Structure formats: structure tokens, C-alpha cells
Image (cartoon, one colour):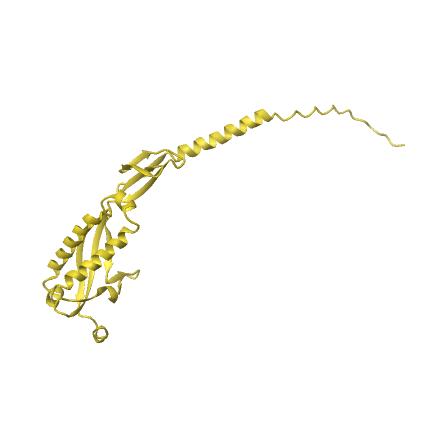
Length: 214
């Protein structure tokens, strides 16, 4: 005959009803904590010593800040755009530097006609910098492209009024100065936030025989 043993177990306590009010309060407090954390993390921004930052409030420019740590209103109320103002940038006309340390010639940019109706290939190296971050960001869609086109136009203008000997030999410095002066004057009118720093003739030479024949 089999023996059966019975072990008494205390009754399980009834489940407590969910306190929706307390749960709702916990959720609200958690959301608020996340919002505060995100706000705190987006309230500050850093500008390095080569930059200036343009601050907009609801899309309108309200401040320009220099290097350092700064406060801004979070959640998109204020936006910050950093601009490299203390950096010399360059434009290459007639050639492009490549990753191998050499360069590729662009004859469509470098081939020009002088004032005495000779053909020359002239490469220019141009340095510029951003002088007005607000004008740079908002006065035009592509200020660098405007500057490139402007320099190309004035280079052809000056070379087209110079002799071939001047372009190839002793007139280079005068050509550089003329181009820089003309472009600087026009930039003051355009007000695109860029300043021309230097213009140099990188190389000048007669064209290849193929170009002459063409």
C-alpha cells in the first residue's frame, strides 16, 4: 500500500492591482528626465580658434561668436553654423593637384590669347579667406564658385591686354597685381563674404603644338 504525504502550503497573496496613477507619474518623470538631459547636452557648443560661429534664432541671425565654449537655446530654437574664417583656402586655375603629388593640366582653363594675338598657357594659384561669415552663408548660394568664375574672367581680361613677352617673362608680377586689384574691387560690390589674399602665376608657357594647330 502506497503512502501519500501532504505538505501544507500557505495561500498565495492576492495580486495587487496596478496603480495606473503611479505608473503614469513614473513615465512622465522619466520622459522629463530624458528631455532635460537632451536639452543639457545640446545647450553648449565649442568653436575652435580657426572658426567663428553664426547663431540663428528661429532662422534669423542673432549672434556671431568666436573661439570658446558658448551657450545656446536647445531643441532647435537656436542653430549654430561654424565657419572657417582663419584658414587660407586655395583655388587652382589651369591645373589640379592630385594625390600623387603632381598635377593635371586643364587646357580649357589655362589656354588664353594675349593682346598681341598669341596663344599662351597660364596657370594661376589663388589664396582667399572668409572675411564675413554671415555674408558667406547667406548672400549667395555658392560663393567659392562665384569667386572662381570672377577670377577666371579677370585673368583672361588682363592677359588679353598684355603682350606674350610680358606673360612669359618680366610682366608676371604686374599681371598678378592687376588681377588681384580688379577682383578685390568687384568682391566689395558682390559682398559674398570672401577676401582675396594672393594671386600668383604658377606657370606660363607657349601651348603644345596640338593646341596651336587647333
